[in-house]
Image (cartoon, helix red, strand yellow):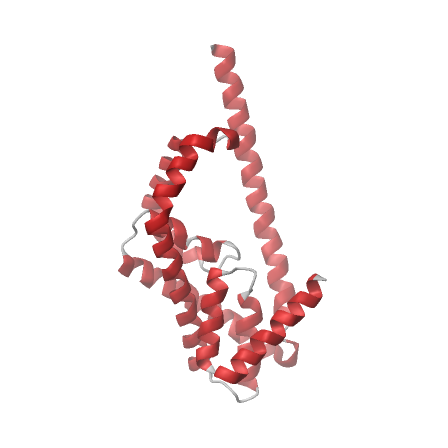
Length: 214
């Protein structure tokens, strides 16, 4: 079922790219940032294969892919800026306790982003799942737009270049990139799950310690 869906998405991506050319690459990468289920590892490796076929050029494909990624990131940046704080803070204040979270945790997270936001935005662009979501806290924390654009463009250019080159090298087997990225993504998910588990354990232990003291 999932494999059939991915095959349909792959066909849809290829149709748009061959029909629209470079604007098609940019459009799909923009949509991919807003809807992560559409994976970039299906887009840019295919572009690399089409470069090998003489349909696209390296500079054009990488520029289009990077442009689409940046435009999608900017949309999420403004969503974070406009809707983030008014929605997230009341949620933490009202329902945070059910998730072992508090408004102070939100403040700490925003403070951490203030101190390390540059690294987080840049490196986040090459991490599956994180690469789209990282734009939201950037907007929520009011990161200066020029700095956000610079870091996002650099990180996105690296990601699109790596995927494009991989597709070019693999040629007709460009789909194997999806398998590699899938394994990479599983490691990211496992690391995030471990971090969440450690956070929950520490928070539960802290709450028990407070109750014992009380």
